[in-house]
Length: 408
Image (cartoon, rainbow, N blue to C red; front, side, top):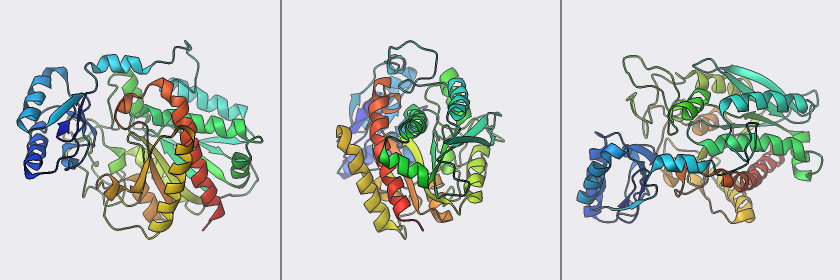
């Protein structure tokens, strides 16, 4: 993992930072062109097409290609910082919670089988606050559980929809959805803010969106990102589900190449997971007032638009709410987040679920990019699950409270 800064790049996780001259620009272009022919895994940004001057870039480089990549970087005039000399060791070190248990644990990363059992048990144990449904199956036939958390009143309430795990390797996101559900039901009646929220609104929570991909990260490739669907005419597997929605689909920041990590899919909602989610939100559009999608990493709170530079009609309010949310988040451990529209805050990227939800009419649409900023990247240690989830809870509750007080 390598990190680039100033003139830098990262390998194994590569970071390229602030380049500010034509020479540096040449280096970036040369580097981006060269890595297309190599099996280099971009962690940040998602593909070489998105590398720009002034950006931090994190790369994962296979050991067999390390010498070649270093040569390219040196020839491009880039300074390199290695974050992980051995990625496998970093993968193993991620599991630093030494409590030995095969049971579900909110401070450990749980595999899909454990999460699946947990969904059933927590729903049954909290029947007064949780109801469970399946919004469809994944490409490989796994059930997509959706939990509705809120006091049952017998009538429809305004709702927040939240999903985790769009990208399989972003394990901290799956952990957060599980944490949120438990925190909501366990603090109901004792935490005035949560009690008020659950009395007056519902949370639709999809704990794991890309279940097939997540399972694959446990069994075959920890760094897998996409879905696991087969692509006609290609041996490359999967689509980037966050490029698969009807929001400037496959125009910018997305690829039509099935082998790319940002492959947009053969058509809008070509992925059954995307279609299942979209169908549920379309069917419940009248009550869904906010859409929160949880990703990692970078410590960002983004809102529309990502597929174009135009400001959202509700830009001022979305910005104000995001600033309040990240202030609430940072109040606990001092973690610093940046907020803003996706296109100008990070890069143009078409086909995202947040832009799609906003264009559908869900006003409060946000994307979280959880910890960290690159030290561990997708391999955030288990010891950081608790603080990450605790601080993110504050931001989610802030947004939900604003939504409840500003219904439309």
